[in-house]
Image 1: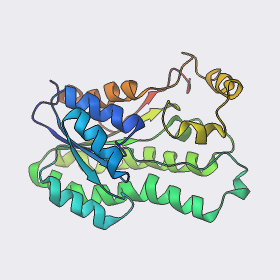
Image 2 (image 1 turned 90 degrees about the horizontal axis):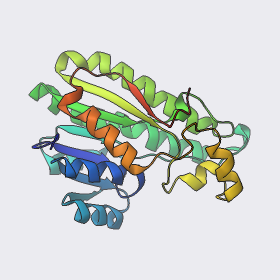
Image 3 (image 1 turned 180 degrees about the vertical axis):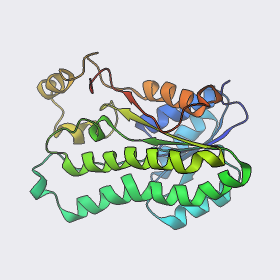
Image 4 (image 1 turned 30 degrees about the vertical axis):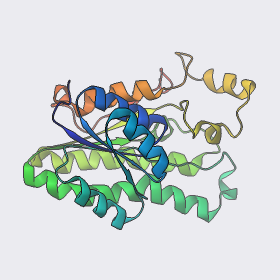
Length: 242
């Protein structure tokens, strides 16, 4: 029960890594708010973990403000929602794809931080966890703008950690390798046994990140056990970035 008595918001929690984090947080005693643009998916996970579903487009400030007003006092904010573009030559990526990546992977964190940090500061405590990616450390070809957005998340995490530490707020990130999530096919371009084998050959432990892996790592970083840890971007990647 490492998160007993804590209230946690997890964005993009209707599936994949976010759902795994929600499940782990609930088991560890947190009151979980499952936030997703897909209301039915959010409700399904919330019902499973005994949490509260909230439909929101995290790229819209008004939705984040409404979330804050609905939740009230928050202890943990997990910015997990993310999107990618299909693997392609960088000069062929559409402006619409680029704008979507900026909105969800970057601007959503900007909105969430600005909306929730004042409450953290008022209470003198709070934890922010941003889900970045190994793509921000060791970029794969043909995913340039996704890679760049995750590099931004890592730098933003470190910058926020330095700025917010005096206010008692810790800020960390997780860098998963690709996992068994709805985004996997998008990362690989297509999902075939041959492409999976090629992808897995780059991961020393020989498997994808799982929602359970992410839940375990997130729980540690958001718990009081990690009270001296801020500004890290922990790789949960089976050795991919070595």
